Amino acid sequence: MCGIAGELRLDGDHPDLDGLRRMVARLARRGPDGDGLHVDGALALGHRRLAIIDLSDHSRQPMVDAESGLALVFNGTIYNYPQLRGELKARGHRFHSDGDTEVILRAYAEWGDACVERLHGAFAFALWDRVAGNLLLARDRLGIKPLYYSLDEARLRFASTPAALLAGGTVDTSIDPVGLHHHLTLHAVVPAPHTILAGVRKLAPATVMNIDTQARVRSRIYWRLRARRPARAMSEDEWATAIHDALCAAVRKRQMIADVKVGVLLSGGLDSSLLVALLAEQGVDDLMTFSVGFDDQPEERGDEFEYSDAVAEHYATRHHQFHIANAQVLARLPEAVDEMAEPMVSQDAIAFYLLAEQVARNVKVVQTGQGADEVFAGYYWYPRMHTDTAGSPLERFRRHYFDRDHDEYLEAVTAPYHGIDHAAFTVAARLTEPDADEFIDQVLRMDTTMLITDDPVKRVDNMTMAWGLEARVPFLDHELVELAATMPAGLKLASGGKHILKRIARGKLPDAVIDRRKGYFPMPALKYVRGEFLDFMRDVLDSRACRERGLFQRAYVDKLLAAPDRHLTRIQGSKLWHLALLEFWLKRHVDTAG
Image: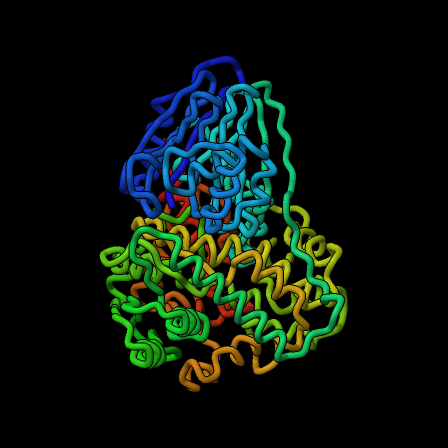
């Protein structure tokens, strides 16, 4: 895992190397093990390295093949790179390194941009073909690794984070009304290509974009998820075996494809606990696990240690447990927000940031359970949507998920940001795409391919990479996701959700872990807002900068400040925190840019 950046001039001028150096410097925390620049005419590439595979200088980036005129910067891990390497060697390609970076370079030389369809992993990369005068940008199927860009008549710039783009300068930082509507409606999810900023775009998952020096842009989607039942009906036993085997393969690849130690973030929930069980089942010993907890609030506990401790004891892991006081959470909040590529309102973003700080002192790679709830229907709102059959797919989804309906959105923001119900149009379009058998298949497919990308996946990547820690997500292995998408909905929704995973876990994990009520990474102080946390949010929203920015209607802000605990979203997020976090992110990223 790394940080990547670059610039392609479209006006015949030379790249701005000072700007690129600032961009690369802003990515230093994503890649603490080295940096590099490469300039070739209209193109300049920059890289920050986190050394995970082939720790030698042979895998330094940018990786350049002068003979073919190819140059590459890459962020991610290709789990099938040994197999691809063997295939490419059989086709006559010679290798000068032992890592996965050069495999992408040789794969492009062999198959062009169709090479992405052969890559199995999490990746974002930029590949320059000097002979063709073409820059290729690519992102993995499920958007596990980020890739942002800005494009105008003079140049294309790209980077792993918007903060790096802003460090380069000349980016339009005005608010994108489409991005704002999605942000305040879909739990801070802003689907590609939009972001909250008008001048920053992001490449969609499963997409390649080619741009040449004549400013001609071509994009294509190279993978789509089908959610149709297999031609031959399978029994529950057969499904359990198939999912178990696919998950074992995903976990094994993410444990073995590394030249450094790999641990597990153990929350105490079913998903991360099952990862520990499957690793033990495959003979992995001396496993390191990590858990974090926070102060309780009257309404909710701040840790799940009773469950994570039970799993760690059951499998005799080298367990590390961290408790972080509320005072430390508030004190460290600004630096966590600085590492957010986009505003992230989920209460566990700061939790992941503070946990990753501790974990990175012990390992450079961890496996984590993100994605299981979206792929296997673990959230409580899925059964509610399933049984609520009134109205269109959009209406069934909206009633149980949207943070604000359009009328409340118009009440929240000022007139310049009024307009159509953008989020509703997006969701309606995604829910009615072909190749999904049932409504719940449509929902889970949208969640897996769109909503998760800009919520838990982005959150985990940002907060771990802030400490040079690579997080791997086996539940989002695309082959496992493809298999699970074809499974009958009942095998997911039964047993209160994730039925098939609970069946696989039975006998491997304590029953208390399997049968417990669905938990969440707890951060009660950002959900039940009072005391110094309320004072902080009031200061942000009453500030001169917030008033002059003019995003929010004061009557709406005052209503939330008067009774924050009475204004929660349908999935139990604080509406006040949504506004305060967005304003605070803009203060930290936009007001100080340039």
